[in-house]
Length: 165
Image (cartoon, rainbow, N blue to C red; front, side):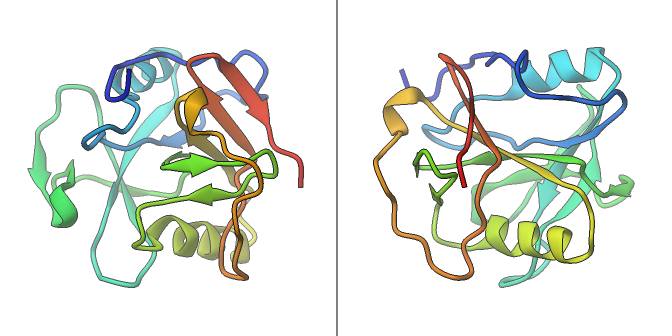
């Protein structure tokens, strides 16, 4: 089941038109959001992918159109070429290992998404953080530290879940 492509439903998530949506290129068993990114692009949204420019720093997002060349990055990631435009996302799709009903998430240990969400939210930017997972990755009451950023929604193969804070 893990590592498969699926297009989760965005039907219940309030999306404005022409958003900048930051996705990710899936690694290992992460949910494959590439079909979702294709659908969102076809709806007129700008798609971006994350770039790690510096360890212990927030992610940067570069605009990416389907079919454009990608290059290798750190941590086995791939991202748009350095010549791609840097954009600020309105909606951030976040890969994760586990999530809970309060929007807590367990990531991959680098802290990149927590730093990125904290920086975007701290700048006053209205950002919607949407975790992407399989339903079996939901756990009760994950531990949260003061630096951990909560998700607003989680989408799974079973639908969209609005998180309680």
